[in-house]
Length: 190
Image (cartoon, rainbow, N blue to C red; front, side):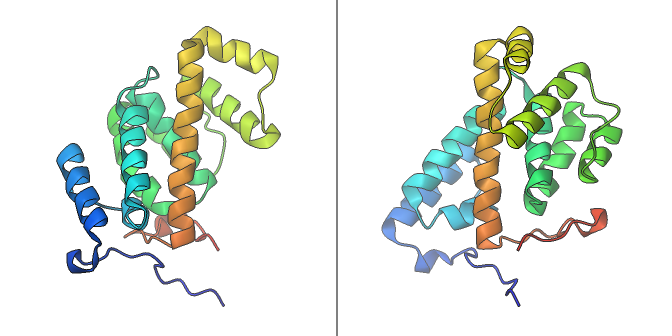
């Protein structure tokens, strides 16, 4: 049987190395909140944690796709990797950014949403293709470039990759979510 215990839980400040303490202080100063969620396991490698934090700030708040599509991508990744904490943090934000409730509900049930906006449908189909084929067809690439430009294509792929990395870290570390996404019937990752 697999032990469900958090492998890399939050560490008390007294247990942190000087590099970890410095990274935690810098994280809080830059982000305006103490280390949380996926950054607890990442703090074991403080330079990596800070690099991931800064990449996250870029892909979430400063990419050419805008907040609504960034949050839509994050929900797709959270569902694909059954990452409940990522879902719990970002589903309310996605709602606030304009992702339709029916779209969020379909994603939660691992269904292709029927009420997606046209740009969401393009993103959904492109990420689904990328995950299934480990690549994109020329037609899909052309559609993405036509809709978002080359920079937007890179932002889409990097946003999905960044949140996939966080999902992998939390799933491997068994970082718990307060809800466990139990209300939507998700199985916990192995």
